[in-house]
Image (cartoon, rainbow, N blue to C red; front, side, top):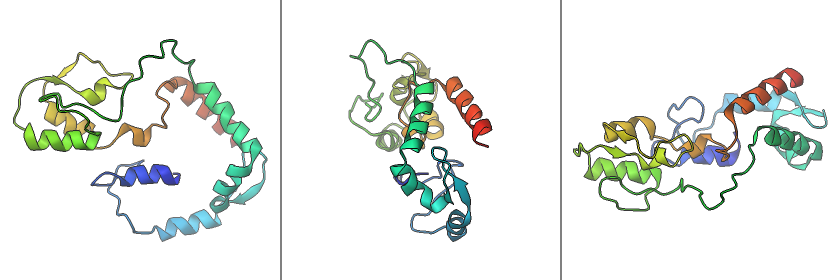
Length: 183
């Protein structure tokens, strides 16, 4: 993980791991992991220079061949931009589907609904899901509070690298090709 990704994982009131979603304890150092990073050798996929993992981030920032390698992968999995540039869904703030109060971030919407609407049985559309490319803006959840608890304990943006238009099958094929090529 890069620092910004880790910081996103630590933002919620109950921080979770970006891989396994187990609880994180901010401020506790993983000394065994640090030692492993400092003693594991790797090779740059751009220039083939050997180095320890602990040095890879600073090397990658200055290695033009590595940056070209990364851009190749990004181009291979990104769809053409949509021609209709007027519609970009807001995935940062959401209205409450019960009372229409606006501008909640995901965590704020969950807390608001738990505090004020926990007993409301009205079927509503989840504004978070409706903003996603795969979301159905007409689907009404039979139990919205349960849905919030199960589906929105973490932000999708923590785990998605910001490109909702990348084709998942193409990404997986690219990863498999690179893993075979890169050893």
